[in-house]
Length: 242
Image 1: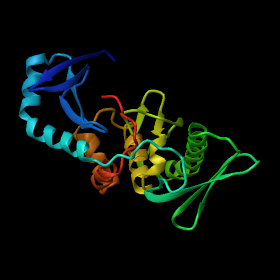
Image 2: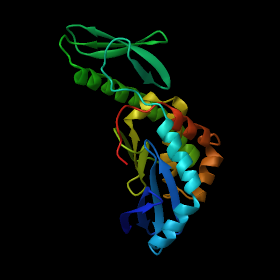
Image 3: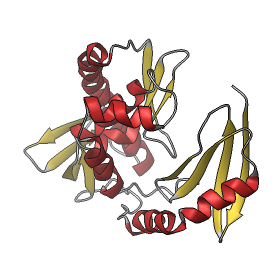
Image 4: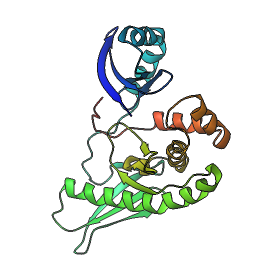
């Protein structure tokens, strides 16, 4: 597919314009910092894009303000008492040094126990926690795929987990491969399921158009609620690029 990417500034707002071989223009505002992106047909010129953005300026500014007000965690120091999230729940970190392989365990409803070797610094402790997050997602995701493949009538050829800067997930319809953001381990199970379904629906409809929304409405009527849950949950400390 032919794709052309450029940037415009409209009323002081930076807009990423992606021209593709599509029929309709689509405008979106994305986390974490309110990145504005327009997907436009190849034949649509800059002036038409500007007019489309101006028409939605009020909505765009409301969305950007929502992201700006969204709470962020401070830089993680990986010390006792620090807050960390798993499946939408907040836990207090309790770090222990022991002479054994590092591991993570949940204790009760409020404690996340981190066991590391003596002298392990903050960056190394975070690596241990992120590895644990990845292991948990590898347990949670396969049952969701098994549940939704027959419902949607699609087959995922492959899937993976990785840290992403600006997306909760991505899909390559041609290879039928989906990627899911490691950060989803911190969100609720409903949010994780929504992103899994969202990416699987792209196997039926590549673009975020009316058909795409209709498919989500049919199979996961609460998807807008879950999308809102993702947008209001605390963000990590990272300054994700726009």
